[in-house]
Image (cartoon, rainbow, N blue to C red; front, side, top):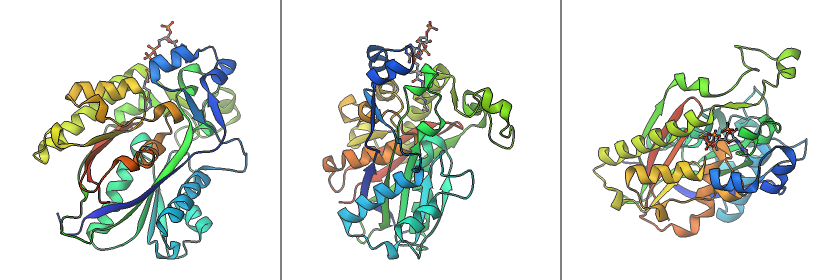
Length: 331
Ligand code: COA
């Protein structure tokens, strides 16, 4: 590992104003507030209703808040990575649209599609550009406008997801012990694609009238398979990460998991013997915002963190993709 480490120097989250509560979901599909809360922990989710708004607007909303909080000069941004599966377009990427919208004239960027693991994959990718001294200010965003790919007639998926996202600013550390993105375990398994995907719209099955009529442009999921794989994947990657770094669970101040389902998050904690009270959870307010959950969670709990705190960020998602990242908080 080089001597330069990438540190997170700011974080902000953004969700659209409109809220869909579980009671609202009861009007759309045959479900109940009791079922949703007891099976997932979700109470509400935010939804973008404005037809002119897209995922880039979620990212811009978060960046505007970050700029306000940190005084960041957008002209100093070198690079923007956007983790998303709901980019504004199939192509081009959303990152460069974001750069234009915020006036980051000196930045370039690209998107990373790793579903719910997109933010951690992007964070690690960006940290390498910092560690090598290539760039000094990188925005790493995770955001998804999930309402654009949900079937509001399918009760097994539509109750789970919401719209939202967040962004962190990555910079080189200025002090020898200034914390940073220390290490990561990242994994993938393409066999998992069968259980969580969109059936049509890609090169394998391009969009036709028939695919639209068959409702094949929405999230398809086999929930039970994903549930088990998520607990196993996140638990194993955390254990491997701890072992690689000679750390025990007691050395970790907080676990920041991708917010998929409260039962999955407690399942991971129990599997590895991590105290439940140190697992940061905000799924009740947003549902699963896919690549957005982790920066949203970091933003909501930013006030809890102090310099030197050791965090493990973990995720599991479509692909399958999963992993865990060891972060020492820097402010
Ligand atoms: N409201 C009421 N009942 C529902 C329902 C809903 N919204 N969704 C499913 N059900 C029903 C099912 O039809 C099933 O009925 P049946 O027993 O008569 O067939 C019953 O509830 C149990 O379904 P099951 O799928 O076994 O429930 P579950 O406890 O596994 O919970 C999920 C379903 C989707 C919440 C859960 O599997 C899950 O969270 N999976 C992972 C999802 C995820 O996080 N994915 C994102 C990527 S990480």
